[in-house]
Image 1 (cartoon, helix red, strand yellow):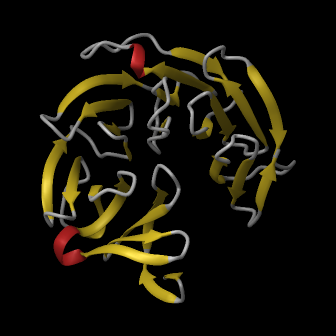
Image 2: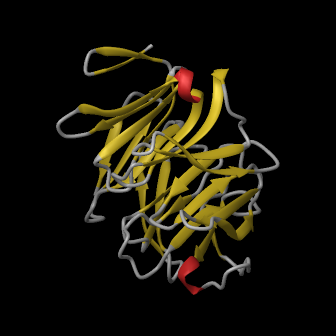
Length: 264
């Protein structure tokens, strides 16, 4: 069981922050719940009678739009479908269906990103939703990718695992034409498989960690240069999360060691 504010809310399948980190959403076996961070209070919930059990849930900033992917013990909707819920209208307003389960989903003001095991799709929305691009990846069982969240950034950066171990690929979507796949920039970030990717708010820096979990490396997304290498520890660990501070001066990393590291 999981507790938020002293309340037992059931089993959480996935937890994600919105783009400005002011709210977070919980995808659960008994529906979804969305919370404001400060002060901590519930903003919205949908029970399992409405959405079933949910594997993934993603807010669009602080708007009424939420992306939902079904999964879990009381599943109502297919794992290969992304549904957009409009909380003002209290109904689903769009549906995106794929050939295999969706492992990760992200929203921007006018874009929806969805990851299958070996491909990432980019759609425009909410008006006349259609697929804009698809990018092949290496085997990506967790659906790893990140997209720059800051709405006024000049570059729209998408980062995902490359085709060989330890590599990442970077695409600037602002320089692409609709319907093309383009040629991503490749960075050899680690010797072993990439386990986590994080972008700063502006999309200028990307942090990566491998399955070993001992080193975090930060790269410039434009020049591909390694900016810094940070050591989390000497023992291998599974990293749960990496995040930049809003000003990009600090990195936060948490792992299965039960510790949180703040790295300058």
